[in-house]
Image 1 (tube, helix red, strand yellow):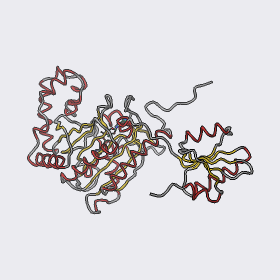
Image 2 (image 1 turned 180 degrees about the vertical axis):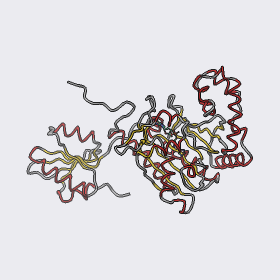
Image 3 (image 1 turned 120 degrees about the vertical axis):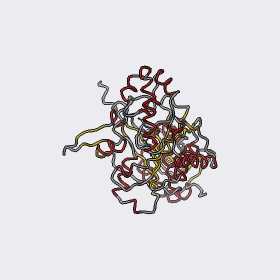
Image 4 (image 1 turned 90 degrees about the horizontal axis):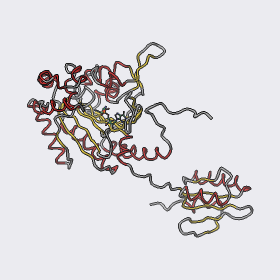
Length: 413
Ligand code: HAM
């Protein structure tokens, strides 16, 4: 027999057991974000390639190496979205959301695509939950965004989490800093990895991310952007830290925090979890005050984050709670049509009800009822009234079919 087809490398199926755990994360995020005034937005899974080239940045790994890009039948260059922030800013401009009361708070969830080397926690199709608050430069907005991800992680019960916090300043101060950093790298170029050396001019900050020993030694001596913030950016960063302190958020200030996307200004942050291996980032984000304008909209400051659902799941690592259903109907062969009629009526009354559809014996049906975690089983025998068995107490009683829905509905809280 041939082995049949398998999912493409770096992708995976979401089976019913997985989807129950994912739904729990999504429900928690939806509750938390909608309470905070975030409206759900959904954008297409693919966009014009140019949106990401311009939005995420030509020099980034994502744009250089990781995009799934193809020409459609009309010859347009299309890219499967590698991230959500540029598409949300596109939608903000396209729908004239700058005319709404600001800030506009949006959240989203869905699949994203990056051609990365697959490993545990790193896939080529993965899912993110993201939140973007567009239209204010107040540090209150940064603090609120970070608090929401902090609370989501806490609500999910994930332990061993660290929040790293930094600031990249504004474009003007960063340009001066980049020159200073490039200068420092230039002085030590023989000690650097080839990759860092090749991209030194384009993006010297990425050198902070290198695993190369020599590079790490050089970077330990390098000035950080945090030490070069101008007065306003430093004030913004101080205000943010104060707000986080007041709300019980603990964090580590990290001047070497660089993110893989070029749109960030001022605040950057990343949540890592020690339960994950090398791919320890469960969520991250920051401020991107120039992006909306760069994509053709009015100058609009904004901040946001995204968290990877698969990474949250690994960090969570909790078994799925046992399935529980209200009713399982056991029937001898001649009574199977009656069993279907009964479960239909019970389902219409809002109960979860099931029956054996595989011709199992009485014993097999009993086992099936157990597996479903049914609170009650019904026993149908030809010419006999229906028997209701309480699976906890073992008590049995006869109930007329027309009263079953009333009898079996769980007491309302
Ligand atoms: P990002 O850090 O590139 O940021 O991705 C956010 C999260 O997505 C990561 O922390 C990780 O949990 C998950 N993730 C990324 N790549 C993969 C992958 N290959 N496999 C599994 N999970 C992955 C962004 O995407 C920004 N758009 C976040 C943002 C929103 N910044 C401002 N607003």
